[in-house]
Length: 454
Image 1 (spheres, rainbow, N blue to C red):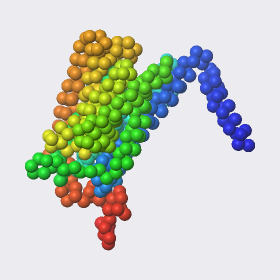
Image 2: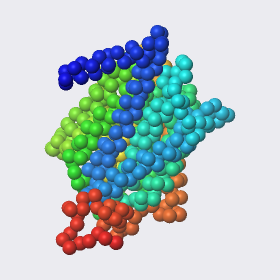
Image 3: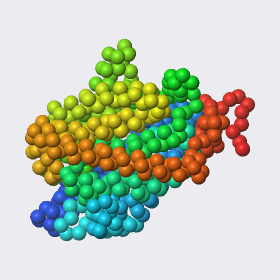
Image 4: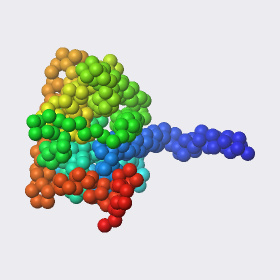
């Protein structure tokens, strides 16, 4: 009986495409269906990266804040979905207007097609979902600057502005046909749009919030505040790594000639280069093969190759990852010397590596791949021209200035009106109890005879 059922299911799997698309002998409907399935799979992979961020932030912070980290991530992703549906997508990808070089305008309260129209490569609804997942990732990166000291209300308010305005404007400039796109800025999957944008919002938050209690001594020296679970952080990197194939390869938004496999290939090489370089440099400098440095290096390699994955040769992907791994190691030390408290290393992993990844296109992009993707020109090594490197530098400077200014403005007003850091007592108790009334690890955190009621 089992064998007959198995054979029947196998036969249905084989025949389904033939039956479903029999009315379209040209194969256009089949191609559209495959594209839609691929983008939907990529969306699911990118959305599941939020699980990686939960484990990364929880594992890198203290046990008393673990439940808060998990809960606020789920809540803010849900809130961001509503804001991006109402406003964000329309600003990022809205129709033509007199200001369309700088901001999209249209498709507010987005109403997706019931089915793809003739000639469409995929239904617009699946494109919305995919783009929302990117916005949510950038938002989760920003939360690294809020970690262990921000009120829950501050997450809610900043989500409104970030998902509804700040991120969509940057996305429009580069991906939505805005002025940087017209200049030829190359950012295939978001080293600038997603990672640098989120990191700079995190920077504004951590500067305004100031360091956690006990992070720095009066003489300026830093104390190491260890995360409570390094296994969580390692697992988070693996989950993010897997999700990144939806992030980068999914950005082809087509099955086509299989180019998505090339993008996945360079992504893997960049990640490997970042992890290996960070481990080796930490071993050489400190005498210990630091696990945290290696994990940060792997993520930095992924961030850096995200812009370049469709534009560079395999050897260049390895170089980009190697440089990112070394860069993130020294960047973490630099920010600590500057007395910037960055619990999740968002500024180094997503910020510095995002800058490097964006600039790397101007150095390593090949004319052949730029022509294939249809964006910009080859880089300095392939063409001998500085043109693409200048465009990449321009996008880093302009996006950086805008996101910093907008984030400081929003967060500065929040700080002035309502305050967005918890009290010293609440921070010492932990955000699990002070903000939510219960610990994420109640059995470990509760003292004998202690009650959490009231």
